[in-house]
Length: 370
View: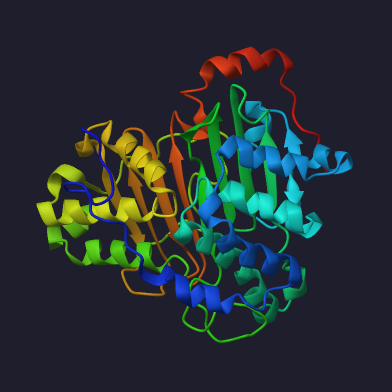
């Protein structure tokens, strides 16, 4: 039976702290290139092309000299080189894009992301403006250091694309014109709660990019009985970061926390709602596919574990791990979040595109680091 948001025991994903009107208004003063990216999005909503066509339009809008930046080989070695720290990324950066390229990029993003997802991408970029003002070394923060990369030939066999920058790494794999994977996925937020208005297009005081997931997790923890809490809280301190980091291939972590089977019905529903919150940025059919994959394994294989404080804005960490997936949420500093969703077999479409990878292994080579 297909499972989707709002169907049966799988509640609708929360909207929470990522309200669209709030963040959209706060981004009107973004630097020119990012602002153009934001403004262009609504204009293309009614005429979203297929993923392959959108990618091809971006290629056509890109001069030959730039295409070597945009187009990368569809090999596992190249695609699995990812990170969420500030650094130079492979791909075509926002700062290097023309208006036509930004419009084509927007159309490609729309093939996978809904409005909440587009707002999350905008907000991650805009938080760099916040950090410019809050940090002593803030001038190094760059809201335009986010890059789009296309792997392989759009529409032909296995191919994919990625958008990546500081605190953002979203990967999409396709077979022809059909999405087969939307993982790995990384969203970060620093600050997790914006402490004050700084202007310049940054989110307003009190904005919480990942607030919905944090609130749902804390509500689940508060619902536990003392024996359940003793099982769920497996460490008194978090780990300084997500445990899986930027691993090329995710592996199951220690089986810790409270098993799904030991929760009551309301607690189980809350866990499913929390899982849904980590996929609510996708187009509906992609959200459905993601959640259906979770249900492909017995739900009783899921465990939810907590480490650190149970008080808001204090260092904490939680993980949701099932037979085929891992979600981590780390706030080790109390106001700086890293979150990730990994699939043990399906990251980068490995399970679906395995035959393609085998064929490519003979010519696989790592894209030169720069």
